[in-house]
Amino acid sequence: MSTPDTFPTIALAGPTASGKTAGALALAAVLGKQGRPVEIISVDSALVYRGMDIGTAKPTPDERAAVPHHLIDIRDPLQAYSAAEFVQDATRLIAEIRARGALPLLVGGTMLYFKALFDGIDDMPAADPEVRAKIEAQAAEQGWPALHAELARVDPVTAARLAPGDSQRIQRALEVWHVSGQPLSSFHTIKKVADNTNNTGASALFSLEPDNRAWLHERIAQRFDTMLAGGFIDEVAALRAHGDLHPDLPSMRCVGYRQVWEELDFQASCPSGTPLNTAFLRERGIAATRQLAKRQITWLRSMPQRHAIACDQPHAVATLVQAVLQRLEQPTP
Image (cartoon, rainbow, N blue to C red; front, top):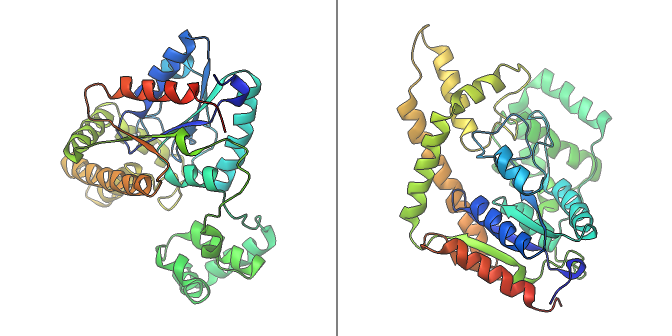
């Protein structure tokens, strides 16, 4: 049997609303009763942001009290958080958790983070304040659409996926070009690493995936309704009231937040007293979340090492727990 310092790094992935939190907490409870404590490392690009609780379905205070959670509420919504930063933070946490005699459990749905941790990612140039200031001055004079056109000349791959007004990402892409002489897109190729010190082996990735996509769609609709009833619109309105946030920030581009922000923008442009069209907002939010889930499942299917578990089956959580326990009984390569 594996000892705490030789445990594999167990990872639990899955599309939004597939039951990852419930599965992780159940697994932690079972292992805890066996004297094998668990600490959860969040693999979610939205959970890192403070003040974004309802729309991210962030684990509740009780859930976080039951099992230690990491990489939640570590950034202000004004700040960015990259895959490279995640790999650095997660690698450090894995070592620290093992040193405490506990099992690191990676849980989330940001597939780029998983892939970067498992396979490695090219290092991008650090920020250069002088270059950034020059780009900002150029944008103030010419406008961000003009800089987007400039980016299209030097890095058409990156420019094609950015909106002309996406100032933050355009700025970063041009900064990388000026500092390194290479397009940002060239740094986005995931590279294999021979020595994977995290022990994220082929059998350590478990994936919750529905056999029937309609089951997941119903869960997504139920979750979005719960968010709306729980004050999601007020949460976004409070973020807007900060005055320093805008819809092109990575935090505000998160699914759900983007749709609520845009509807609040539209309402603000209407005559005073115009009610928010919550039915239309609900429709857009659910559709966007379904698209996110579809992309997540596509990512997962590109990971042949995963152990897929049908999350829409009656005993999915029990199946997950049993599969992980069996993995932990195997010798670590």
